[in-house]
Length: 386
Image (cartoon, rainbow, N blue to C red):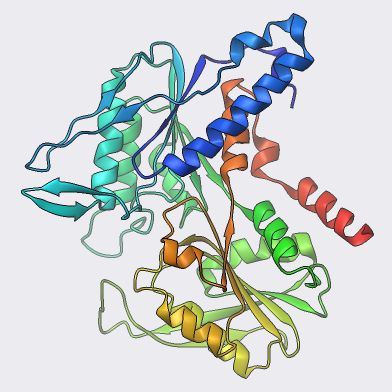
């Protein structure tokens, strides 16, 4: 990546919304160190003008006692190429309302994001929103008289002047059809997941179809699993959900059972790939069935670990030998209790985000970053040679 041969779109500025401080700090450090190194290596090209100790722009959303808020940016963003990182699912931050502490909901985070965009007042040269887990991404289609919240949210952002929206592992990437004239990038953490499992489980035979298998927990996640299966050369299986469509529990039709389609899993390591772990009911039920089918070990790749009903049932599954490791990214909030669990492994995505921001700021293509097949194959060749 020869970013030093061009000028940036504008002076780089990065805003980390409330709850994104840790991720923002890591991204900022990566970009600052890379640009400092390029400036030292090419002293005659004026690259020092692009380097700063930090690209962080202070922004906040102070609230009144009633819960109302306002967006505030503490320095000028005129002419900046502005990147805003927002985790709308961080319930670990709270605000006071009528003397009560209220955990922030996705709606609160999204409103704060709009407040900060409004505070920029249209002065930034370009605004890119990095929203790892897409706000209302699961409300992406209409099956009856109901709202299409994800489409409305995307249209609202672009109408406020947002040029690009970057998200990770969207539940349904077709939501980008709501904003066909603006940038929408759906990024997948495939390369980082593969690197992490090799580092965490050194004895896994990741390219041997006789010893390892990819399994999709439902028909909707097959595209993710097909990618892993094709790149790694592994067999592919799938569970499909039989639901009771006559009742609705917690906004969804309850699952009656999971049926498996695929090759024999006996004696094999199985990797279950999904976009998110919500309650965890489906994953644990599948792990139980795989144990009964005599799978050797069971690993889970999930971009987002929500664990909305707690992590105790995963503790039980781990103790009973149904589950060996769960890999999720650090793109959304993880509780301290989760990060301490022996069955949990965190996949750091801050360097990847820093690469995307650094490349886009110089108006370079990120196609290679979005499709890391060559990097995955080079990594696997290195592992096999060793």
